[in-house]
Length: 229
Image 1 (cartoon, rainbow, N blue to C red):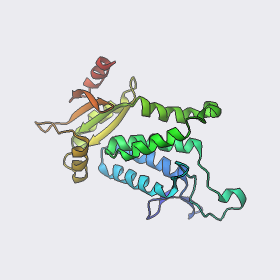
Image 2: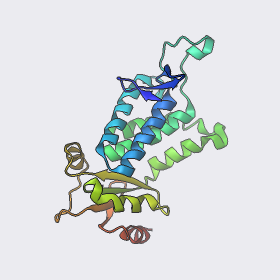
Image 3: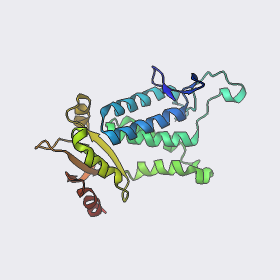
């Protein structure tokens, strides 16, 4: 897939653009951008995630409280020309919105995710095992992962980020913030965290906006989470 100027992803094959604005393409590209931000600590990936979220508004149906699977007005024959509100893609999109809201501090997307999950709360039973994505998204909403807010320039926070990514005992959501990056300075203020007074890298461990530990060494992650458990 490849992004158009309006931020919507487009399905390419045979060297040419064919299908533009599929919800699945938008959602998985958003997931990839959030993962890239967590791994690299570079704000450009969070900016790209934000553009993908904003562009997906073209797919959102306010009356149905869900994202359509494609842009309306397609030229496909019969029922294929009518956009649907797919259960699984909407559940996964809600999960990505929860993550984006937590990392960016834009809480309106958290409310959007809750609305989408609420839309399907009386329907998910009939999907049986295929409701796993919905269950995972609902768990993130009801019992949020531990947020590891790592403050420092990307080269200096590499070891802290790698240590956080290796954690498995508790679900951990990485949020690297570079206090020297103009885009991240605004986000740092919005989220309410502060850099270390001595200029060293620091990681705040928080659960549902309540922080319970502050670490500066990779080895301290496990001890802090163990104490929390």
